[in-house]
Length: 260
Image (cartoon, rainbow, N blue to C red; front, side, top):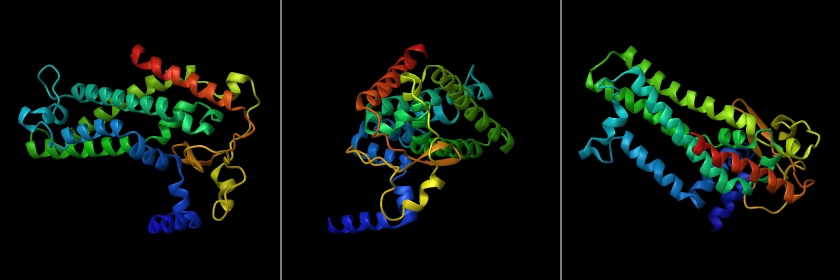
């Protein structure tokens, strides 16, 4: 315990470690490991399939590594698998959001809360997609059934299927997502960027950060794939308002699987 306490204190005092440790993506991974092992179990099963470690005697990994459509390994077969994989990733994001979003009240103050949650919940899906693409390349290369160029095109087709599913999904959430400003007609304040607040992260907690008691402390999050932003305080909002925003977005997320 003393070692863990010293390790935690070293993170608090070290700017580089603190920046990573209290980031929203990292804390979502920690949350999954502590509270959502059931969700991770599904990922482990699929990792076993694509790595040819589970159900090999039944040929299940072949369904993932050389999928067929009308008895052919084609761009369409990989596109369909990619589209399905996008659905699985989105199901993971929806389940995680519905179960955990209320632990992060700052989400209610962001534009498109669910989309921002998905953006920051990228670690496990990104690792899976990366490993999957590597396994496809290795498997098809060893089978010597197509050229390197064609294998890469198959992988691009798989990624295209994921992208297509995400584009449909985010179009839906773009039109249905509610934040605290849109829902209650409040004036939207500019989001505080990480650069504006990074000087105060090194020692004491930034005065803009959330200080109310809650389960998970977060300092930074990905506002866009290329921009890190500082979490704003939501103390001046009523808790009922924050909960209502999270609930509305959870309802929208819950309806998506039925629409699909």
